[in-house]
Length: 343
Image (cartoon, rainbow, N blue to C red; front, side, top):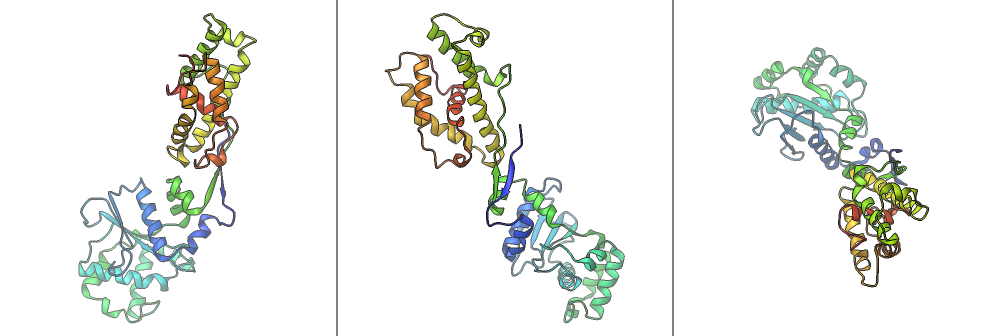
C-alpha cells in the first residue's frame, strides 16, 4: 500500500519558514511542546517560564520531581530575525551565571540554545570549542564588549565561581530541524500548527485468502447467500458460485476501501474512523431493522443504498472519502458485531 502523502496547505509555508513568524511566546510554547515530546531525555516535568522573573529560564525541563543540581535542562528561546550571534547570546549567558551565583536555581545538566535561524557561524564555532568559548566570554565581559556593556555588576565572586565550575561543553544548540522533527511526533497538533494537509494514499487490496480480521463479516455474508439459495454453503462454494462470487468480492473490496480510510486516519485523526462508524450505524440502523425486509440480502442491499445517501459533512474524514468507504463501513460494523444481515 502506498503511504499517505503530506501537503502544505495553499498559502502556507514549510514549518522551517513558519517558525520565523512566531511571536516570542509562540516560540517558547513550541519549544515546551517539543520537550514534552522528547522521549530520549527522560523528562518528568516540563514547564514554560518565559516572561518577567524567569531568570533566564524560558523552559525548564526536569529529570526529577525536585529541582536539583545537574538534574534538569534549561532551554533558552531566542526568537530573532537573524542568526544568533555572540552579542545576542552573551548577555543572556551573563544573566544565567549571575542567577547561579545568587542561588536562584541550581546548575542545570545542559543549557540549550533554540533560535529559529539557528546560531550564526561565529557562535557556532565557539560552541564547538568550549575552552575557547569560556575564555572569550570572560574576556569580553571584562572589557564590556559583545553586548556586555553595563553588565559588570553581575560579575560577582559567586558568579565567577559558577563560571569556573561550569563545563562550557554543556552549552549546546538545538537546531530548528531537530525541534520540528520532535514536534512532528504529535501529528494532530503538528499538522494543525503548520497547516499541513495529509493526502490519502492507495487503499489495500483484498488478499486472495481472507485474513483473520475478515472472519466475522465474511461469515455473515456466507449466511446471506445460504439463506438466499436455501442450503448450506462454504466460503469455497461461494467463490465457485456464478451467482454470489462477484458480489462477495465486491463486498471485500469495499471492506478494504474502508480499511484504507481507517489506516489513513489512525495517526492523523485519532478515533475519527470509530466516530464515522457510529454515525453510519445511526444512519442505517432503522433501515436494517425494518420489518419489511424478508431476508439478509434485502437488509444488506437496503443498508448499502441508505448509507450511500448519508450526508456526513461534519466528519473530519469527509474530504478524503471514496465511493467504497461508506458501503465498506457497513461491513466493518458487521465485523464489530454492531449489525447482522441474517436474523
